[in-house]
Length: 123
Image (cartoon, rainbow, N blue to C red; front, side, top):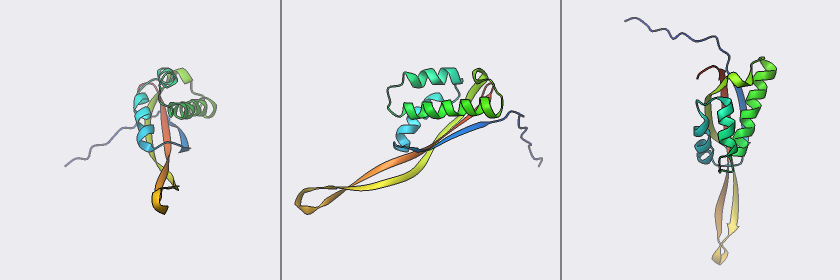
């Protein structure tokens, strides 16, 4: 049985990470799903007019990735596309709220990790 070799392109992937987004991973992933595979210009416009509050944090991370590409790799920001945008769990702050009869109810404040990967040309 012959092994199949995967030929990888010589393009460079540019990464930007935001490690402390104050929103649950499920909510951030809804917005990250919007921009996967888009050109950076179209993704920025989509995030600008998105009604979700977390779109501001996703847009900042995308702008950071574009700035990384321009400064570190001398790439043009117009030719980049969003190759990947994925979300993971970060810390969970646990708080308690007073309830009736001397009890306490838990409150979980969830944080997310957002990673945006850009590449030149089509993703």
